[in-house]
Length: 576
Image 1 (cartoon, helix red, strand yellow):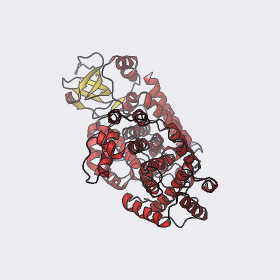
Image 2 (tube, rainbow, N blue to C red; image 1 turned 180 degrees about the vertical axis):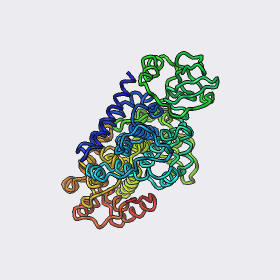
Image 3 (spheres, helix red, strand yellow; image 1 turned 180 degrees about the horizontal axis):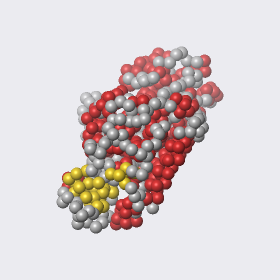
Image 4 (cartoon, rainbow, N blue to C red; image 1 turned 60 degrees about the vertical axis):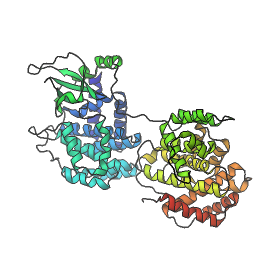
């Protein structure tokens, strides 16, 4: 029952916010908030229209604080989902949204002016210490914005030009909520007008985070009341392609010709009303109950989803599998291979671009077959594998994502140069292997909530020392399991398993696995030196450097040249 689901969410919120007013704060307040938002996010996945509609349906029977906290939390989730944020990062920001208002004393009346926020918001230092202790860095960074809620809209938003994407999303969500739910009765704002005010005051660099809201939920989101061209009223229950699905609202002054759900084109909506006060939760069943479920099942045009398709890390793309199966045949059919590549536009584009860059005259390569012939089949397979892997690693935002991508590409370039210097197979395949060796940075859950890259300066050939986190051994384990899932060659998987072991290079004959292990360790050492401008290597790292150089038969001068070339081409550096 939709009404009981919404009632349950508000009851849980009431219980949670009561904990924030206890002195001292409960030790499990962080976990309680995470649990609440975890359940809320699950509800959003199952019933996005119903849950997101609550933003625009003000519960007049509840204290203003509950309305504002819940709406800010939902707006945060919506903007994160539309911008493909990592789910762990999204949960952190939803928690921050709740805590922005959690310490406010509950009151039923709305403030009388758009920008007044009473009582005065102050940073709760005990709560900050708790978030620091539990390593909730994204949450803490967002919660610190509570101090800026006293600023007027323009002043607050102008600071976003140098602010991280996660904090920007939270600020936009909070300010949208305050614009919708904080006006006096004379000047209420509709969602399109509130969004317009945000856009007018937001720096251009951050407007890209708002842009996905244009397609969903659009200017007439679920939960808003609208006037149709014929003067009748309706409530929007879902977003369709170029139109919205509505349920009629009958009144003596504005009768409706509709008796049940109907769709209306966006251009035929005459007016979008501000958020409406809702006294009876039973309305939820009328709008999103059994009749709604039947409507969705029978309709030929399905409601748009706020979610975009995500891909599992441990499952290679089907198109990549098809390409690999063609490449693994004793004799390749270039037409069939070209057709397989063409099924994934990003693969085809990347193959043509790299082929263009490889040609002497840099002539644009428009044909997939020409790209395959330019690279050769084996090299083409590696290039496509790199693109597939990077697209998986880069599909969801988290604070350190951009820094990790820069580092991984730097390491891949160094691995490619080492393979060329050591005459060790195809350089592109070495680059791909370096990418696999780094996937732990994108899979380890705790790294999704960190905002700073803190490293250890010992054993610089080991991924476990690349960034300080709980269970650093996961940074070694994830690459192996990922490579196995993506059906990489056995000797490469062996190298991934052992390259962090210093004795492995000395105690084994320099076969393919040992050479690749040396390449992975050296590429990590060099990448760290360039990216962080590190101090001299520790004794263990120096010994590893010598052993790896010996295994690969690469001279010190060649290694220095690789460093200089990598630095000049990649331009990667640590923002820390």
